[in-house]
Image (cartoon, rainbow, N blue to C red; front, side, top):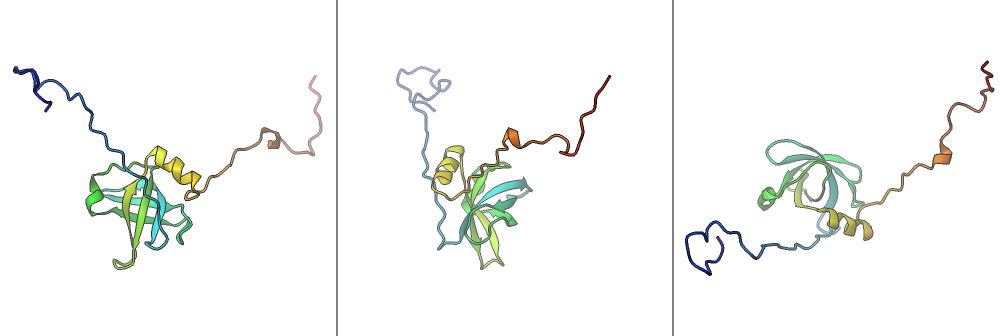
Length: 140
């Protein structure tokens, strides 16, 4: 509820004048803690996800199941979103999602080299229609 500065019964209907926004820091993966960066491929139920690991910390290009870690169950995770994974050897090699990255966090990770940047743009001059053995056909 907003602060009631003027009094009256309409104070509950007004919105707060100061928005409550928190800026969270970008968590970087560390090699010592078995942390990896992955992309969510599919959402199952009960906070379980299918994730492909993209970082070079030992499990690159491996697709695995991951669970949302304890207190992080309230974060919203969508398909195609980058997440921070923690590998736990105690629970038979389970991956836990510890953080979900936003778009500005992904750009920071790409600049620092944690996420590989692919330049797969095809050049228009490389496209060949037909084979080189084809002869010209005159149409009357």
